[in-house]
Length: 313
Image (cartoon, rainbow, N blue to C red; front, top):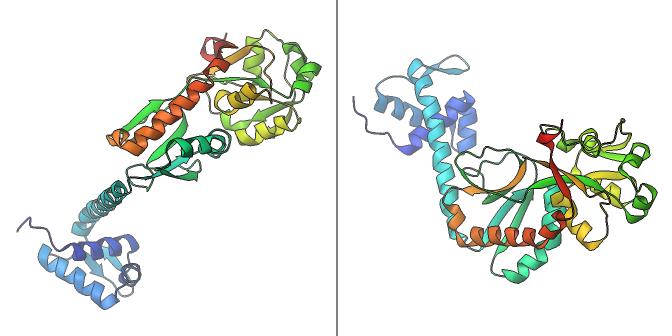
């Protein structure tokens, strides 16, 4: 018995048949005839020296040897596909595909893209807004910006600015509710996307930090932070706004945060890419630009007494 590998086409036919448990469906996937696929698998079994499938009346099933081979074949083709995609992306030196959540894309990235295009006209940015987990070693994505605690095993991870939350509202609403205790009668907006934070960084926690006793009255609930912020900007109510989404509006005076108190959380936005790719010129330029843009609004954080939610009693 030899360890010499069989032809790649035969292994590919086996992988497809093992996944579908059907020669006909595997042949359709590979765009070959069932007879051609059956020939490839037969040649593989001759190379192996034993059957890999049991041919039943209208179905096939893997032999013990086939069950041992199938996971390795699948992983091998996945790794080969990922390596091929990575190699092809390396040729697109001026194209950068970035994924971020819809809120970060609309409230942070989109308003600043003109500045990036002016600074780096040679780089073409492509965005995939979504919260789906992205495998940077497999998917055709160069950079991910994600919010949470991590860990980010096997990736280059650059934590961005400390995140805090504070009540934000229209200036006219601030006149109506001038003190933290007034929030007990105010129309509050809740954003459920922050419910995963532990300890909770919500209205009860913020009121506790402000020394206000009483249960808040939530008037509106949204599942996305950008929708909650849009509601606050429309005068619907007051939202506990997260730093990344509100600093620009606070700096411009479109929203106000009148109470001077913010809750910080250990969760952060992180700039993620594959290990070693952080030195790629386009990725390094985008990362440095993101950090420079964050620094432009750093002074907004200095307006607040920032209390770590973990320190609340």
